[in-house]
Image (cartoon, rainbow, N blue to C red):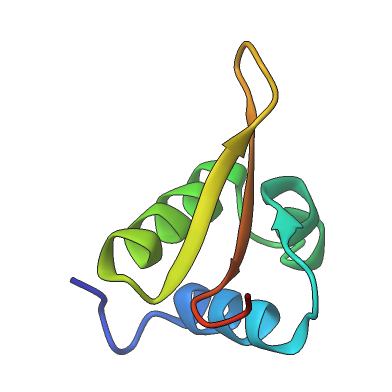
Length: 73
């Protein structure tokens, strides 16, 4: 369940709505310079669980995630 007053979550949704391509977690981290990777990843996974955004792992090993707005493709 998404907290309505969470500024990090709102910023992530805004970033993904403004872009025309999927973004890796690292790219979102770089945009949100003042937020830790753990917080960004936690919010992204919550948003994916809520159905607000979509995400997918890419690569092998630890793997990287890409994220996009729900109705992008």
